Image (tube, rainbow, N blue to C red; front, side, top):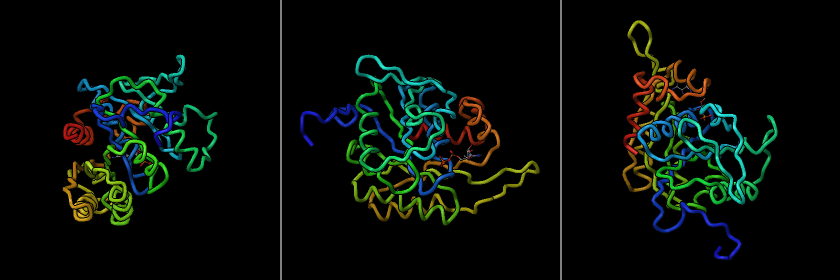
Length: 263
Ligand code: ADP
């Protein structure tokens, strides 16, 4: 710390105007990446300058969900990120060969994250969203060291077991003294064609996580919204056009746009 070789991270400088959100979850498959790309696309559509850093080393599905298979280009010492749906995007997957799994240990991950934050030409971003790996791992701790002012967004499903692990991921913020911007509940229900609502994963997980984190941290952690299960959302992700752009009037699209407005 403080030595001259330490790369400069613009978002960590005093006076930086970029809001940094780290999207965290307790476990995989709860929709963390889907939420990240949709919030990014929604904010970019509002005219904000937005970047996404896909730091989910195990999942890295962000480029596909944003519909890009472009690689970054190098201009002198800077890495130029591809732009998809007006969002600048960098993913660890852009630096690996084919489908090889990433088997980096803590220190290497820390350096990779540092490089993505310092050497990528992000420009003047209003918003940087980071898609963290699930759980309470090295990447979350590294990020807290590199950008202490990053705020946490916790994604969970309504299921009690998922909520418990999500709460653990959120409570890292207690140790790192980061702000928790809020909780997002995904896969909250499924609207059936006959008009009934099916709560596939139970109910209450998002509110429980928000309440328990509020108590643990001693600051209000709001439940920012509930996103229903919709086939369209999954299809939009597979197709590479986020649901907030492809079907903004859908129930999940509306929920995501509403959450983006609160951030
Ligand atoms: P994570 O990043 O937490 O591992 P993903 O965003 O990759 O989760 O989502 C896992 C899968 O579930 C993806 O195929 C995604 O399209 C799908 N999915 C996520 N949220 C929803 C939703 N609300 N409705 C339907 N499918 C969803």
